[in-house]
Image 1 (cartoon, rainbow, N blue to C red):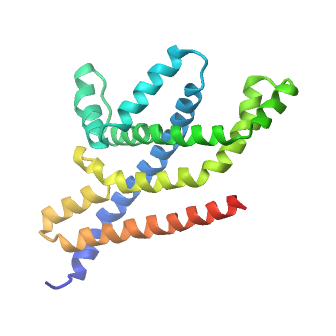
Image 2 (image 1 turned 60 degrees about the vertical axis):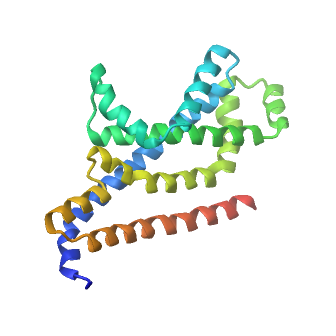
Image 3 (image 1 turned 45 degrees about the vertical axis):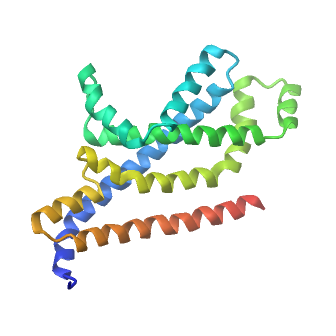
Length: 216
């Protein structure tokens, strides 16, 4: 089998389109997972069981079911209830929601790691609850968990090809369309494999460097 550079060149327009969609899903999905994860983590510490119990059940359910199943549910089942989103929006929500249940545990660990004395100091200063959280506790917690959150961003990147199952035109779907049109499979798949490496590996090195820096 010979390598066909013309097939690579022909694939480039689809590649750039797919890369843009992949990065869009990654950025928006990360923001959604970080935001919802913080909401879940704060709900875990709510004084009322009526808040804690549903959130615990929901997050455990999401973490215990495959992302692909959740993706199909959002895309194929919700429209039967009158809730419709585009494939791209559905995929972004699915990834963000799925990983929010993992980032919630990271937030929880970071909050639990804040020394008890910090809580006592905030109480002694009579700081209001919202100021205690956002000026004292969360800044210290986020500093501890930033590397872990970075690892989940890389994991989200590697899960974006699952969105091809519902027709999102990310990298894998674009390579499938190119291969179906040209009957060339090696070149498109190799190109997207290299693209994932070029994105994920430097990102992993950045996370490790950040972890070492924060550990000082």
